[in-house]
Picture 1: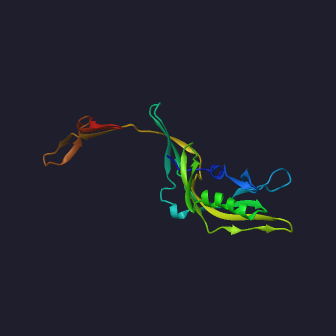
Picture 2 (picture 1 turned 90 degrees about the horizontal axis):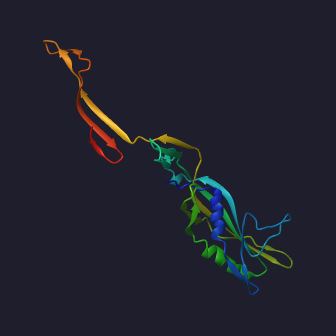
Picture 3 (picture 1 turned 120 degrees about the vertical axis):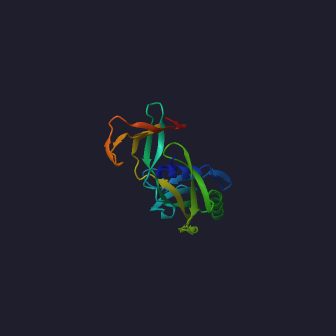
Length: 232
């Protein structure tokens, strides 16, 4: 079965990965909001603290994981309720690397910002980890998630407050469909081979001069099915 996923489902898996985190803010347990792109709400952007944002920043083919059969088709369905059975085929997925930035946001309190970093970048983002992503056929695929470089500080200081903003870049190794179309192919469930000996007339010198019509004699026969091989 396919290992293909979609970028949207990778986004969903990352949101799930970082959901459910809580840190103390001024002594009160506070949920960490999770956003795709920037952590802002309403018509006029306003950052939410504490929060974490997930942003897709690059897509590139993963040639190191490519294979010569990537352009071949694979079976994604089989219907044996009809005769002959029908096999559904689709082009194999191609390997890609999706690059994301994982950004943490907190305001004013440096110690609480470090608690946020610990919860998000250390506990939820191991340097060489994996996460489950729903594939295109409703199954689940484990995809590698790896650090790309180190954490970068992007803190913003104003006169009366500081926004603690840290960024970590990760790569998610996935297989993506470059062609989602499918093809139904009838399946051969039985094959028969027969070998015949021909009859012919010979001249006195032993040379063949004529094939005798209708004089063929069955020499050997074989029947092959999905479960058996026998004589015909």
